[in-house]
Amino acid sequence: MIPEPYHGTHAAAAQPDAVTIRWLKPQPRSARIRVKEHTCECKARIYELCQAGGLFFVRRTDRAQNGQQVMETEWLPSARMRELWHDIITGRAV
Image 1 (tube, rainbow, N blue to C red):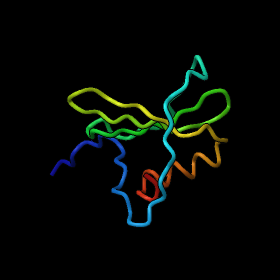
Image 2 (cartoon, rainbow, N blue to C red):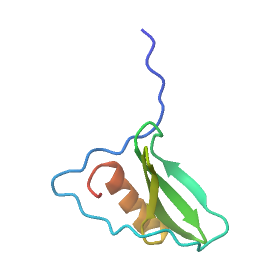
Image 3 (cartoon, helix red, strand yellow):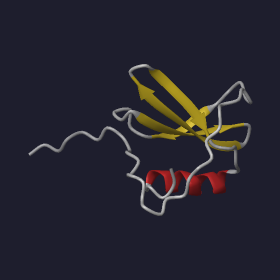
């Protein structure tokens, strides 16, 4: 039996006690943004862990038939954002 190919990380469903993230409208703060990690493109909602100017943030894109909406978290130092990224992926933050 051949295993199915791995196609990406999926964020877990929100847990009952999940923390609510304050999502903000994106602001043009940096000319260059690097995507460090991302969730799978097969879902309508994707998350990207981004880095710019020495700080990190998470970009959330909700895709629908009538277009898409992009939001992002506040920009934080690496250690704090890695914790938030882990919480998003495990369903502990939404």
